[in-house]
Image 1 (cartoon, rainbow, N blue to C red):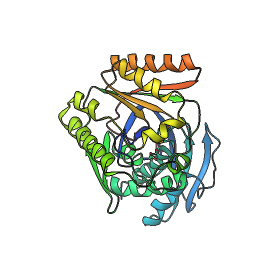
Image 2: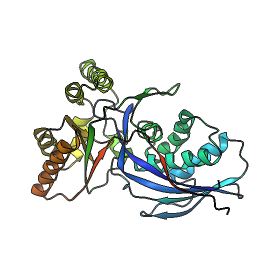
Image 3: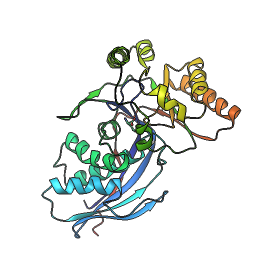
Amino acid sequence: MEEVKVFCPATIANVSCGFDVLGLALDDVGDEMIVRKSSTKGIRITKIRGQDLPLDPTKNVAGVAGLAFLEASDYNQGFEIEIIKKIKAGSGIGSSAASSTGAVWAMNHLLKNPFSTLELVQFAMAGERLASGVAHADNVAPALFGGFTLVRSYTPLDIIQIPTPEALYATVIHPQIEIKTSDSRKVLKTKISLEDGIKQWGNLGGLIAGLYTQDYDLIGRSLEDHIVEPIRSILIPGFDIVKSKAIEAGALGCGISGSGPSIFALSKGKKIAEHVAEAMQRSYHKIGVSYELHLSPINPQGIKIINESDAIL
Ligand code: HSE
């Protein structure tokens, strides 16, 4: 096997109360990548469709993640990567994570999986460091493991897979502006009050318990963010109205997807998620904000092969 084509899912990081530690994978939106073995050492990014991004592997998140993989591997040849970008950069649904995880997952697959998924997370985090200045794992972990993931600890890296209640659906609306993660991290405070901490870890514990026990009300009550959302929401057009209309339409909860500007809502069942989508869209129509919409079940699998060929290069 010399070549593999993979689907690399978009992801929602933070999920309101889990800044930098919680994330989930989506099913209906993601990038595609073709990775093939090459007799030339190193990483070559041969083609990028859909976006204007650097082909230089040291300046591209997929390249940087791939180089981290190669450095740890005893494979002494190289890989070529083609990227078909479908997730917009600066959208808040893990565009850089999709590229960096897709590269390392496909490379691992072509070498018959010498590395564990946890090790792949570490390689992909090098891509996140390039993209945002911080090697956060809350997008790359769900892209690689699927479902919901919790980064219990960064040092040492400890990632827990959290079960996903079956009826859970995500609605994501992306106002058509770009917010760089590095910029939306700069606006955050580096210290929080004990009072806010108490609310936040109460909610994070509640959300995890709700996911384990499929308690949708508890999930809804726990989708609150007292630390990051009050600051970042100012950067997002119409955030408050979109959020209140989503909740009114039946969403369990609603918040900022990753570092924004996308806004996500979680609902019980596709029907409610569709109502929520309509309500969110109506709000943006009213205030004249153009948007893109995604409606998706939670992706239990993460990255997957979409087409494989045995073609020898
Ligand atoms: N946890 C990161 C942040 C996710 O909110 O900055 C970025 O997608």
